[in-house]
Length: 389
Image 1 (cartoon, rainbow, N blue to C red):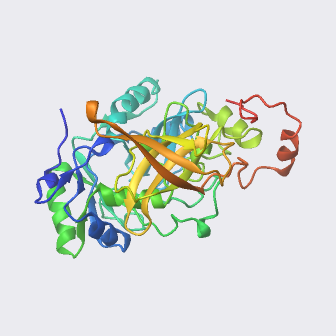
Image 2: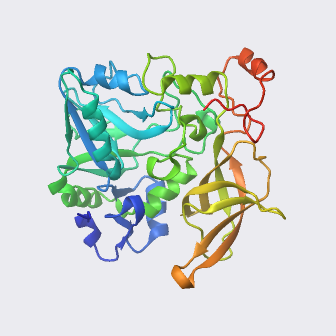
């Protein structure tokens, strides 16, 4: 059954599509909503997200053993995130995680809940863990607050991006130079039947109601990857600079750990995420899935647009995943379509890239000796890169 939030019935609400279907894209004034969110004065209905609850005395040690993050001794009301990886180290699930002292709460894209619960159930074996899909019972509300939930407050997951967590590393700039450093964001879980009241309570306190147009624009500005947008069936965490918050490089073995370690220590991620500044003179923008091409006679396809947004200050911007070998200063165009069916027309938009993961493909803490070793390796990739995937 298709989900529809009660908050979507507000006057002026325009429904979102894709992974945010069921909540509002905006409520009639997307630029004003985005500015309110940026200055810390807005509330966002995020009830399209999925929620899984783990209970039982073995929940943290078990989750620690099968995922990418060190959560064995996760303290109550301490937020983190982690991956479920394939045996080849590719991202299958990305989860926001917080424990309340009794239960561990996992927040993810709604479409991922069913396969996630199925996989966790298969991996439970004899461990004392109960796994419950509680999406129908709890809804998320987004707040521009940079703080963990306090004792007595509802379960709250704080997005600490782009801070490098203990055991993590970065491919992009340090936190103090990162455009996401000032982005405050957390998700508060409330009983689903109280969602509308919880939103209204925040409005009564002076906050404006904002839609996903605003959240996505600020997420793209912050270079924050999202499972439903930036991840495909080939994605490894290094490409998206996601080792900052979701991977502990020094914990014990887990599925996909060997690839994570090899790419970090010896290899280079085969692709890299970039931010694109799009020409807005055509008054239309491409959608996710549009091709990124070299601007020139050959028009070679070098990547794919993953997220597109209209930012209140930057204008039209996007995240894209491109070949690692693409020069940082290469002139680009984004090629998509406008319209559908017989009315569809090709849309070509000029784009300039802003580097997130450098083409060198080396993390901030890779041992210096590893870089020297790479020079003697025989390239395997078609772009001259040493591929370890």
